[in-house]
Image 1 (cartoon, one colour):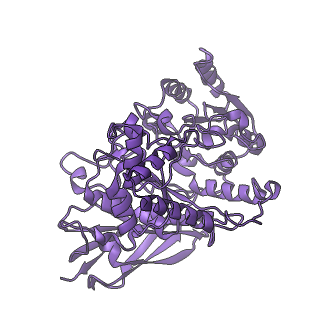
Image 2 (cartoon, helix red, strand yellow):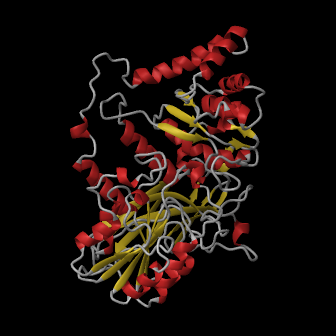
Image 3 (cartoon, helix red, strand yellow):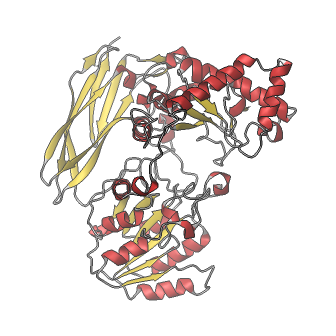
Length: 560
């Protein structure tokens, strides 16, 4: 696995680059600066791939998949300077994350070159005994975790870890050198963070937190993340004088735009959210010059609520139907199905049947199945978790004060079990298998139109160690200014290990005025052409490669 050393972050164009940008913004060039803090990569590794889709349940990851899909993003974070890593609460291939020497030491330290410290997730060392049953006692659990590579125990209400560790050192079961190693790593990061500076000054809260500048950044981020998924007959943007009925459980809450770990653990304490921020409803009310009516439509609180919404809809030009889910995090958010809860589906059916144009807005941290509703709605906006300024941003998009430019960073499923990803293998779209999501990865509409053409490569034949330059023209063919994200995909036509039908390798976002054209250039490196081969080493194999942007394809060949 020594072949891991290198620019592995390039494999994951979205997550690697976004992660690097987040770390850079959070830490700056020096995370001891007053306005900066060290970051933590989590959860290492495989936490995002549970077999049954529920939090803290087993993952099964082969070594090739580990090398190609899971480790690159962590190495990206390490190379970006993140000094701490939190460990996977669950297990991979039968080994709990907190007991996995291969992952925590051999790979993380020896191969990825991590120099900082590792920290447990909540009580997960003790759970090697209470839950996982790989330790015969809490004391043995501490020994297993520490010797596997855990440096710090994160349990502020139970100090038994430290007592057990002292006993283990005195008995010789844990070498003192291992404790010294962990302490050295922890103190080094604390020193780098400036925590030992006696005259270290704290930033005043009043002028440095929840500032107007921060709110503006949040709003711009929200604007660029909101995805216009459907816009039949150009129903959007609405005119300000449009009479609108706003309904649904996510219409008048701030918590649903922020999710778990916001203000409180579950993020659901609505009364603690800043009251000067706008929910979707309040933002619509501020921007509209027409009639705005709100009915939540919750049949659980009022058995006639849905009928009232259906009747009221007839008095308006359009209905904004706000669906989604309440905030959650960790096992509290486990669900049995991606289907919307029955009460929301009942409301949606009634609104659609009322006969007025419906704009569906969804909020939440994961896709819920909305296929039947989306098919009958004139407009669909995927809001996900836009943050505190999300209400204002959504209203800006709805009324056309901002031209939407968000692109889906996931494949949005059509059905609960229809989970085929954009970078699927050939057999997943062969002989009855197919990729048929509700909205594909990279989907996102605009109030203008764009086209790409003249896709070209600078060389049609290269050696395995050479770069390829790809150029393409992108044009705004519509009537208003807007931003377009150009996505570059690559396909290795024939390889010794089955390759995805396409993989995202690069992307650029460009703002264009109506009629404007810009030529974009991308560089594909040998790493972009490589994959984890039969022998579990990274390799560039000779043969044909397809470059895809929009509806165009260009080819080049790597020589023998």
